Amino acid sequence: MRLNELVKSFDIFMTNEEKQLLDTIPSRATRFDLFNEHQQIILNNLIKKSIIQKINNEGIIFIKKNVQ
Image 1: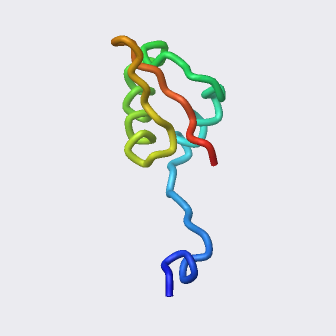
Image 2: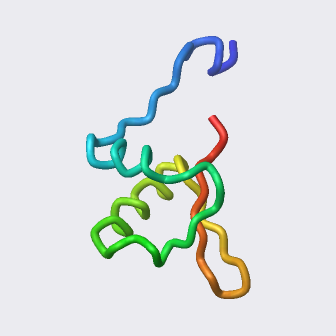
C-alpha cells in the first residue's frame, strides 16, 4: 500500500500572518529585498515549508509561489 493511498489530503500548517503575506505576493517572481526585515523572516519560513521558492539570478534573490 502506498502512502498517498493512506493519506488523502496533505495540508501544511500556516499562521495567519504567513497566509496574509502569501496573499500579497504576486504570481510572478518578485525581488526578495523589496520586503522589510520582518516580512523576510516570514518568507524564509514559507521557503522552508516549500510554499514559495527562492530563485538566485546573478546575485539577485527572487521569490515565487510554488504551483499548487
